[in-house]
Length: 235
Image (spheres, one colour):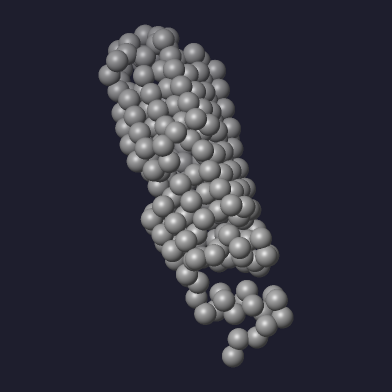
């Protein structure tokens, strides 16, 4: 690819490796077939409104990349990532994020149907009330994230950290938590009816949070801890 410019490379290649695409407006340069971007620098790249169906991004730097309104159905993000990526309004049905850094990413009004996030760093991510909320989280760190208004009915959370996350108006009815943390999470109008919280570290629960946990299943040790903060001892 030596000597070719970006336009020529994208016209000839469908697997693009190690290319500096930082700040490039890529939307009008991509062919119709899916690309594999591997170890590329896409910092501040403009992919807004692009057709990215089944594209793959492997270990790419994506800091402040713009995917707003893009069609990312079936796309894969393996590793890489960066701060403040924009996915507002994007179509992300069946998209898969594995081991990616999505800290501070924005998914406002994104379509998240059967979207999967596994082993991702998602500190401060905004996933508030997207279109379609049947997305799945596993072994992800969502400390300080905003998930307000999302529905996770009957989902299983395995290794998910939600410390200080905004879970206002979330629906966790029938959900199961395994090796999770919800320390100081914001639980306002949050529903946990039938949820199994025995595998979650709840931290110290205040009265408002306790009301939100009505109907949930907790362990004897969790119940004893909650009562102890209210001056009661379970024998």
